[in-house]
Every structure is written in structure tokens, then in C-alpha cells.
Image (cartoon, one colour):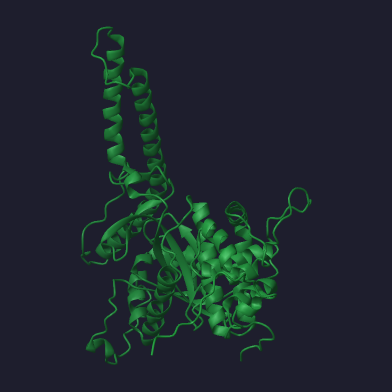
Length: 466
């Protein structure tokens, strides 16, 4: 008896069904995305209200196209354009026969950041209205390094730029003298003295600009380092005044010039060399920040991108990124990279802000037998205790341990989903403003996809959750 196969006939003309929905499962996320966008009623789209020029694609359709594409791992405008031809769900979003080209998609994306931010907030408010997001509660904050669309080999350090400028000045001087000598040795075929001199002059100007930008950036960082130094020095002076010997090395004021290793990238000037992964390698990257709900929904409540290589200055900005109508924050948990006395005091605002639970040292994921054992509540510190001493006490309490462990259970899995499941591990655009748009979109898509899972896939006539 011979094997039998299903017949595949590609020669007989085929037609799409009269309704594309016949080819899309009822529980497909595409239905949820379209319904959600229609319910959001976004007001901040950039639209030509005069009605002149070519017909415009409806903003709601374009937003649904971007959200669904990002939620299914398609971020490039060319990839999205191609999908309007071969992906049935995306054809359905576009009405079957509409195919916005990559230029149109890219232009819509870069012109409508305010609309994306509005959509981000309104999705969360819809989740709140339906009972899936608490109005009052805690957040966990963290940052993840995402590669820039630039090679770290296109970067130059402050020290190296200075060395190259001096080398170019020497070569320019040598070539100029050579040009003044009528009987000088000729150059290789195809090379000319004026062009070689001009090339070195241009390169020198670019390097000088790079050093100037590094110096300007350092001035901002220097102010923060000086403030941090003064706080540490004051703390040590207080300890000496009370008869105690301070531990560790004496703090040092920041230098007047940028560190030799300070970098400038010629491809994407606003990106930075940053420690990535577990910190064992460096990448040309941006620092993408997020605040996530710790009350069960795992929805991202606030997001932004910074060019700061570490998180030392991000505690309060991350808290402020959460719109007050989305969440009244009562607790914040963060890892050790966010801690500084100034940051904690600013965020807590003398009792008017949320209570911060910020790790004082790196904590591993493994739990030892000692970690499992019940511990007595620690003794409360005196009123004169420093911010660091109060934070150490706070984290040792049962309440503090329960709040802090939510950080690992929420924000880290969310970043894992964005990078590994959605596949977003590198920005496609360049410059802080444009990569911020990408982060707004990918986190909006994450929230919509998460909301889709929470609701069972439908918003139509959905009862309010008790």
C-alpha cells in the first residue's frame, strides 16, 4: 500500500474569501487591537485638517497597524509594509486592499509621539476602568540596555580624540611644508596634497567637536558627582564629630576634565558605551527605563529612555513617568543601582511621596536555607539615623522583604518578554527623541498584548471585573 498525501493545487486560480475574518480565528489578537484602538479615542494625532494633498490613511488604522506589528515582532517600516501584502491579519487591519508604504509608516511613527503616549495612558485607564489595574499601589522600576543603531567601533574616547588631533596637526604641518617645496617627493598615484590636507583638516574639526561635546556632557555629570561627594563628605564629618571613625576610602571630588574613557559616537551622537547583560561586556546603547505594576497585572505604568549609562539619577524620573491618573504610587522598589540618599529623599519628599525600598547591595536570585528561615523583626533605627541606615532597616522587615521581592517577579520578566518574545533587542532609529518613540511603541504593544491575555481576548461587552 503506497503513501497518500493531501493534494496541493497551485495552478487553479484561487480567491480570497469575501470576508477576511473567515481566515482569522475569533480569538485572534488582531480583533482585540482594533477594538481597543476604537475605544481609546486618541486626540493627539498629527492630521492634515485642511484636506489638501493626497488622501490620508485613518490614524486609528495606522495606530492599530503599528501596535499589532510590534506585538508580533515586526518593527521595521519595510517589514510592516511587506506584511500588508502577505499577512491576512494585517490586511484585515488595513481594510484588505490598503498598503501604506514604508515612508508613510515611518513618517506617521515619527510625527505622532504624543498620540502614542496618550494611547499608552488610555490603555492603562481602560484596564483600570475594567478592574484589572488598581488605582493605588506599588511599582517596581528598572532599566535595561538596548543596543543603538550604531557600532561602538564608530566611537572615540576623549583621550584618543586628543591624541589624534595632535597627530593630525603634525601631518597637516608636514603636508603644508611639502606643498611649498617644488621638488618634493610626489605622492602615490591618485593622491593630491590639497585633498590630503583638506581631509585631515575636516577630521581634526570633527574630533574637536567630539571633545567639546564630551566636555559639555561632563559638566552636567560633574554637578551630580559634586553633590554626591558633598553628601558623603558631610556624612563622614558627622561620624567624626560623634567620635566614630568612618569606614572605607575618603570620597574624592570630581576632576575638572572628563575621564579619558568618555566616549563620543559619530554614527549616533546621543548613544553611549554602556555595560550590558551581566556587566561583563560593553555595548553602544541606550538605557530604557520602565515602572511596572506590582499588584498583579504586570502592566508597564511608565516608560522613558535616557542616555545615562547607569541608573543613579533615575529613581525619581522613573516614578514621575507614571501618570497620576494611572496610579497613585504608595511604594517603589528598585535595585541597588538606583540608590543615593539624594534620590531617596527627593522621591519620598518628606513623607509626601511613595515609600522607597531600594537595595543597598547586589542580591542574587538563589535563596539559601537561611533565607527561608523566619527572622525576627529588626530593631527600628533611631530618629537620627541616616537615609542609608533607615533603608537597611526597611529592607530587613517582613513588609520590606515582601515588597522588594516583587521587583524580580515583575519587571525582569517584562524585559525578558520584550527582548526574547517580541524580539526587540535593538533600536532601529537614531537619536534620543526617535529611540524614545520606538520604546513608547514597543511598551504600548507589550501592554496591549498583556491586556489581551488578561481579558481572554475580547473587550466587547466585557463586564467590569470585581
